[in-house]
Image (cartoon, rainbow, N blue to C red):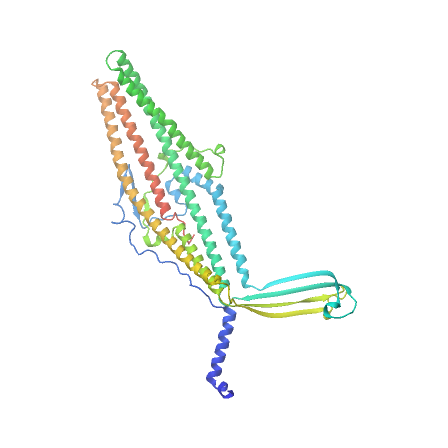
Length: 490
């Protein structure tokens, strides 16, 4: 046997095994899968046929997709509206949801730092003072009982060797949870800013529609007056008066509804800014104060997964599920804990630190799971199932994101087409009104025809205002669908 051990090859194998064991004890191995980012979808376009026809022109404004167009973090400034910029700034500094999300992020960061302490030795110190009565009878002696004081000063050090990488996976999961919260904050920022911009656009559209509707009501009032005079003179039927009064009443009923929607938009802006509606005062705004961005970002579809906070958040959740598999796997294997303790024990404070009272202990404990009724095994299977569930959820988030971008691209194209038609209708109504006025000045038509033509013009203008607002809001939807400038680099 001595001859076998003396062989160089056997000695080398023993030393290699010992070195491997030491390396395993010092560094540990990592159980469970190593996480890698899911690959982006292999597509070259968001919709069949590619981007809409370029440029998208309507109402004197043109939009074009450009690879040079940047999507900044403060994308709302592209609309060139000081009122929008001010409202967004107020919301970002006063919104309660943002404050809550930031607090949740700080909590996850602190939990991550707390979890990282598992890699360091755990050191504890203690001091105790007690008065005890000892009875020798307990050891079979008939000596009298002893009454004494006992003072104890101790310190202990323990360290759990992360042999199987369970602790490393746990901290990895904590870091990934921190990423979940971080991207959740960015998603909250994006949703908040989009809601503020959309509310301001809606508020401007309602204000302009109220102005146009009130002008139409004034025209109808004049038309009713003239028609009533004609009916009294016998030149017109009184039913025409009733018809006009019916139209006037409908328009007057629409003004409070528009005013209510505008007030609701203002109340929403107040709440988003962290203020009470009674304390929030908004400056006047019109659609003419908002500029339609001309250059739209031409984003590569494969890069969308790295730009949208909700996708990045789902990816971080997938990372958490992957790390949890490693934690559950490591729990199936033995755990090694090193401990050391020392201190002083004495019955007198005056001789408390005398070397005769020194005590110490060094230990290594190995704990191995033997039988847990299948608990640890099925906990690992549950972790695998959770990973499969999270992976499916991630895939659904990506699919929904691509679907949103495709919908917005089609909406922008349709918005331009519809607004172009509405612009032509308003131009035709404008020309008709101009011709009727010329005929009225020439004496060939009555003033009532002017009122009718003017009313048609205002109706076309209201439809045009709605088309302008829809195009602006769909542009906002595009910025949000593309990630709004928030990504894993900022």
